[in-house]
Length: 418
Image 1: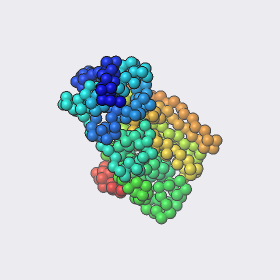
Image 2 (image 1 turned 135 degrees about the horizontal axis):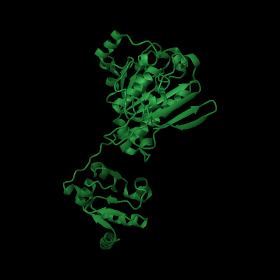
Image 3 (image 1 turned 90 degrees about the vertical axis):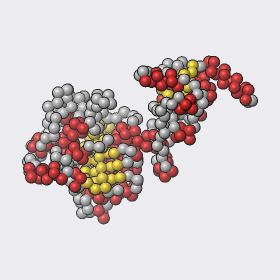
Image 4 (image 1 turned 180 degrees about the vertical axis):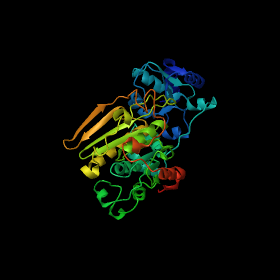
């Protein structure tokens, strides 16, 4: 095709489509109009800078992938390239696909910059990260942007036992930037049947140290913070604050109620799970968040308003547990955390996944938020952390012990382990 023929083709395309100036696009977005903006340049161009809140779809994949980003063919859809030529031709092609409100940006990204409008230069994966996480970045739902979110995220695990072990392994392998682990126990031979973070040579070692060594071997780029102490009402806020998501793998009711209440009060999502013999269950407690417009779902107290009488529910040490079961359930916890950190899929908010490995059945039960819940309800009555041992009918913590924990805070026991 000669230059003259190409120019004529571009002029013909522009006569058949709608074009906006960068200023027009900027004003419409400032006025709150919902507009999908798509950058169709090549990856190296995108990495040098792009319009904020735009999605990247290279020109060669536009017709194949556009429906993933804008399935409604009547909604405003702005296409831009470097100078407005490729986008004009692409806009006409999308019109032929049935998109009725597609717009080409005059001047493209260069015009946007020349108009002194702000642009974003993305962080990029280095070569080692690109190789390590290549199976993630191939997924449209994750890609480079989602992987970068994982690398910048922080997840706290309550417990480095049966549930915490597989969750920690897969979160580290996935590239979660910081993993916190709360566990004051040491490794026992009886743990090795299911707690795959630890090995024979770790018997007698603190679990947080054994876990850190294993996670370092899985992924040396992950930072592991160990909290070798019980989590209590006196240190819970200090430990949990700053994390994006909490995974609860504790095996006692006082800790379950404590972590639930603390996460609700701090507005941090909690991926909760439990196991018993051959059965397990997983759900996500999403606190309401006024700033982000999140209405929130039920919390642990909505499902279990009152703890069972002491001794009524046997522990795994008393009833036993299939060693493979926590591997399944803890892995599901890791999946739920990754989905929320990246922002794809539908998390288990308001849904309780129940697993019975004896007949390999999976059931999902709908769970509604209780408007009268004392923690997440419309008029909460529990607004600060309480004595959870006493709440669960167990001996209350000794005051001098509690005061010591409160005074020292978690920093005394906190270690950067990897």
